Image (tube, rainbow, N blue to C red):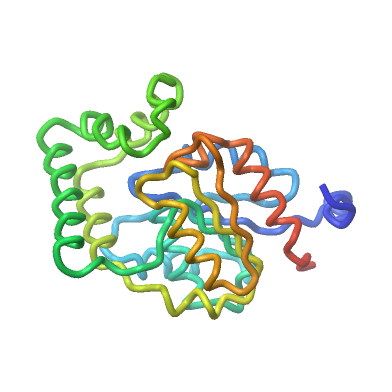
Length: 253
């Protein structure tokens, strides 16, 4: 902890930090961060409600957020965070984008393949249940070496099982209709962390490198031996990166 952060902690001053979960995720995806960052930030996890629009999810976060806050989003949550930044950049003390993206659905066959893949998982969820779908989904979303980590995999399966196929359908619709946030990135003025797992097959390091290069005040962190679920797969490394990011934000007292 830096000297300034230590002084702020001693004075009882904490930044407000909102954490936004990704597709079908809930508080569990951020559990290690909620606990591990509590000494330097007032942490709250946003609830992705039932809506078919990333913009509407962003508006809900804005309505419930304090006047000034730091914001971190994972996966789909990173896209929601960019929609918050599009709308109220002046309220953001800092932004963290984890295992995420910024472009709209690709045109042509690439976009069609993404839509088909997402709808195939939805069909599986409706046919066999959310847990069965999650067993298929998790195969490409965590580092291959972690697929035998029963504790990690069960936490992910439990989290997805708490959601419903109807919510899954709404979130898929929101993602397929996602706005292009390319124009938002160069406008960001707050300290911004861009982070992903080195083995993230869905949101690869090359995409995060491209994002970081478009953001003026950015730091790029690539977590080794880690897939798409970085906050759960490598919580210590993610917490260390988020802590450094929080400590880089000028205190708002």
